[in-house]
Length: 116
Image 1 (cartoon, rainbow, N blue to C red):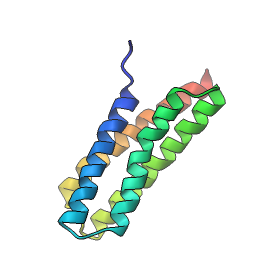
Image 2 (cartoon, rainbow, N blue to C red; image 1 turned 90 degrees about the vertical axis):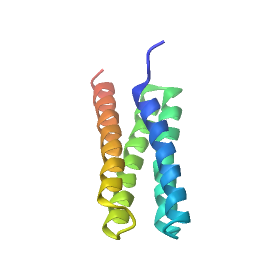
Image 3 (cartoon, helix red, strand yellow; image 1 turned 30 degrees about the vertical axis):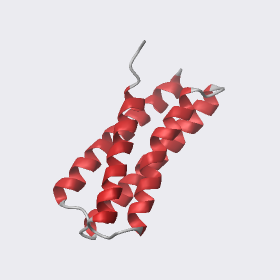
């Protein structure tokens, strides 16, 4: 069986987001922005999973498009948390690098799917 890179990376990323959420709530006492990050950061993998069993190519593209929007939104929340000093530069860069990798993979999948 072929490895599903975006499925694996989005799950690993969701785990990191959950742990970051826990850290922000417990250590930084930040609850509003971190909740937004939790919602968007974990929904990426959920949409990838939904796309995995899409009924049509159009349905697949739609679900992957939502995943793309969610990872982009997640990058926004990471940037905001960083610029308001809830995340250190190294914490931010590490999370952002993973998010950017995922958005690039999803974008490539969508581009490939639309040309087929």
